[in-house]
Image 1: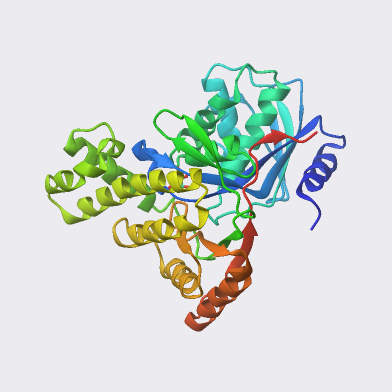
Image 2 (image 1 turned 90 degrees about the vertical axis):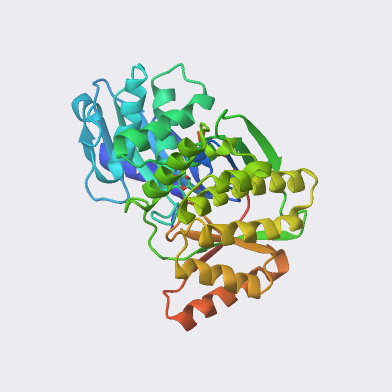
Length: 385
Ligand code: GLA
């Protein structure tokens, strides 16, 4: 397939008959560790993928927005009335309208624009294709409109597009990763303060690789499970009298659990509190250059998601088990859950063996063949030319 940037330009030209004023790219992401901790004000450690979404764009004189995507034959056009009414624009174009809405709601003069979107980030695999679209569109509109909006404020705006316009109650991780990640690094993000530290994650130097395994099991936030987990965490924090579960220290976990009266809530809380600690432990190891040693933390994170947070599915657990049995140093589901992708940390020389073992396990169980990709940490949203 042609390069994604060339496809964005071609799409622009085909739809609008001229060349774009510029192209802006934003990547997909995987989360190395720290799942369902972001909306609990906790810690996450994602990195950006080499797969990107590119938006080719040019300003127009009137306050209207026309968007073309590879996902659909027809462009979508909307004006201020639709942009200002959350939920009015639906489908893939909602992520674009959501960004226009979030910018306007924050008081910015958003320029009208023509946009064409092309993407190599698969949709529905839990690799943040939506955050990639939001962030590339945001970067384009900020620059085309000369808006006074420093990049460290972009993640909250893109998150508002998703929460309040599209209606998905997600946290701040995906947009932060897509915007703030740097090549060769994982992004250690404190989701309460939005402070970040770029943590070197040099897989090549350690002789390691990260395999991203697409379970092909449909990834469904929208079915309410994600919202239910979030609500359960918020109720638990209220019962414990803390602003968020991040405020339960690891040392106080047992005492906190003893104050909760149902087992399900106890398990949800235990996942979040132990997962925050695993992020901190992973960061310590990576700071010390002990990359291979993070494997057991990844695997423990998976067990916690499977047993305590209950967000995995058989395809996902099969991929993790098969990868570990074939010698992966650690493996876990990444992203919101109920499908999506698994990441496995492997010796570089073992990558193919592990990928084959997962494919064999899928065939044995009668699952659709998984997708596998070896990835290195890439950079965040930026202008291309
Ligand atoms: C999805 C959400 C994120 C985060 C993860 C789980 O990717 O968009 O905000 O909550 O799930 O860690």
